[in-house]
Image 1 (cartoon, rainbow, N blue to C red):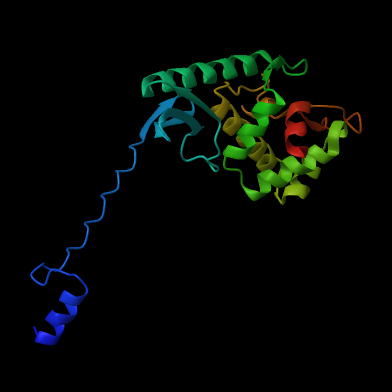
Image 2: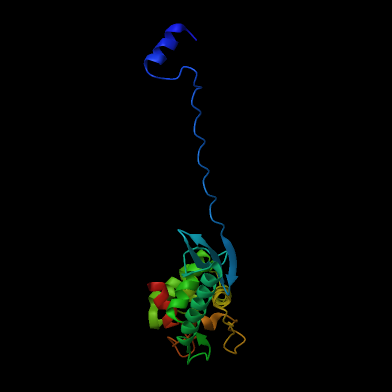
Length: 222
């Protein structure tokens, strides 16, 4: 170190024997709060601590198409938050079950519009199945024949239409935990009655039209 440098430091009142100040060590960040993952019914539950409070949130179980938040609850502990969320989900399911009706045409259980809407958002429908549902929804109470349904969705046969239509009902029934049974007729596969029913026929010797349940139609048109 040169004498000029020492004199300059002394003139500024600095201790010429002081060592160079050390850099302050960065403050360690707190680790991100852990997230616990569980399940309740058809929902996935994620819980943890956020901004100083415990929160539990419910989402559709994978492999759901969307992962939107269904419900959440808070608690003094993580366990309390989870319990509160489970109770809220159970109450939600009970209320929805109470909104279901028995279809006069089939004798089967018909979910509420809210249940249909949630199911349609989550289940994996093919493009022809979606086109089929949309065509029936816009047909309203007039319904469509199986030939018209095939034309709307691009199917080549009435048998393909019935299988596809029934497949929608089976997917909805599986998601909502409803047994998707048929109407007691061999030509009507299981699942179809959960989607719609046979309405009127355009001619005496022609099969009756298929009509969507009002609740499913409302869910689709919404």
